[in-house]
Image (cartoon, rainbow, N blue to C red; front, side, top):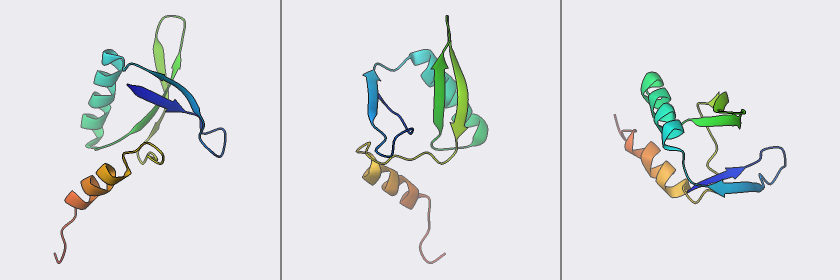
Length: 83
């Protein structure tokens, strides 16, 4: 399940939910691999026959997603204390 929010309002209101398109997910995975990233925010627009990526954010916001703790734990796993 994918949740889409609009950043055009201060509250990032919910604009829709839907199933993840496997092809788009694979393309995002390729971007992650290409840039050695753990997370990317990718904005897509739908054309008449396909989707187009129009923006990629290397540091996306996960506010309000319910993933905040998992993201914080992931970041913490990349750090070393006392190194």
